[in-house]
Length: 456
Ligand SMILES: *Cc1c(COP(=O)(O)O)cnc(C)c1O
Image (cartoon, rainbow, N blue to C red; front, side):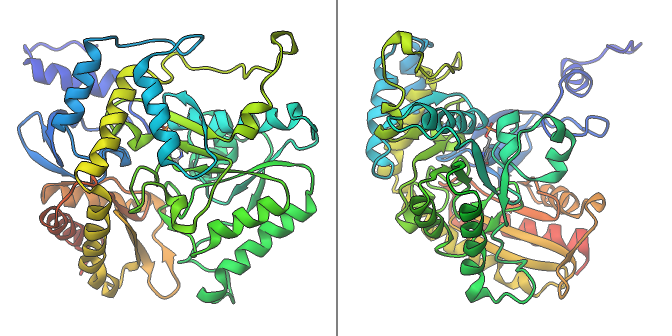
């Protein structure tokens, strides 16, 4: 720590430690200015000076029912009085079992078996390894199925396996030599369509390319991994309707497993509990994290079918076990938070609120489309993206180094709203419990941010 002559206050001391010693995620530490949040309630974050900020991104897309919800707080406290941690290596506890029962009930048909971890990246990693091992151990093995088919610009987490199936080059290119090879289809973007493709033909256009890959690598693909409906970190890219169900049909025809990464879009974000429900899709794997615990604690889960589970059964000596585990996977504190979170969906009619406020948000953002530096405004449930462009007609984005999205979000903070962009895309993902009043404030701050970053 640096030497200083002046005595510092405790708070200055913390700010200094934060800047000099605490390495923040996806953050340029040379420029980082500490922002301390020591308290929150509902949709509000309070910084160390008592300033209130509306949490416009749900604490990194994960908060569901607001911060410090009394029911979730009480569930965690109740669990603390029983036990905080039980390993899942050879033992269990009632809270984790109860969450398992509930998740099997509320997820799409066929997802009857659950493997817990503590973060989304691990939940994807688990699905990949399980799918790979499944083909080697099933009754009629197909060990030549060792490839994964992934979607262009996908994001599935930051561990090496999940980065391998990811495709956001600005994050991932550096690690290329460490990654395994993946087949990659196009990013099914509805804003930037391939040349000559009309919006109404986009879905079939993209699906044709996936079908082509499935044909060319027939019998060699273990699984296809996709973020249903909305590709989060790609910049909230929204897929054409029926793309997901089209992929399900194609993967079934080709005997390929389908992994749905619902870490961002699941737990109500799009207005149904799972994004897959919009197109009646039953995947072979469903990964959930982020909002699973209401955004409170690290809990993630990989759900799969009895068919996959069965391939791992056998005598101990056959070594068919899934040799994978995380110390805190399925931890009871997190599971207690998750159970309370699921209860609240019913008690507070959360999905109805997502649909209502989502529609209102879309309506309020509509006139931003007229702004000459707004290329696109796209919405799905309580996910909205305002994409800034240099040129509306050519859809050319600002050079990323200009940080226009960042400038817009910084300005929004002056209007009391906390947002974090993805490049040129202003991300709006408030907690699912937000009201019309909160939406009004967010939209006003976004409009102010756009005018500050790009002019009127
Ligand atoms: C956030 C995210 C992940 C990774 O989850 P972590 O908990 O950050 O490891 C994976 N997939 C998607 C779609 C995500 O949005």
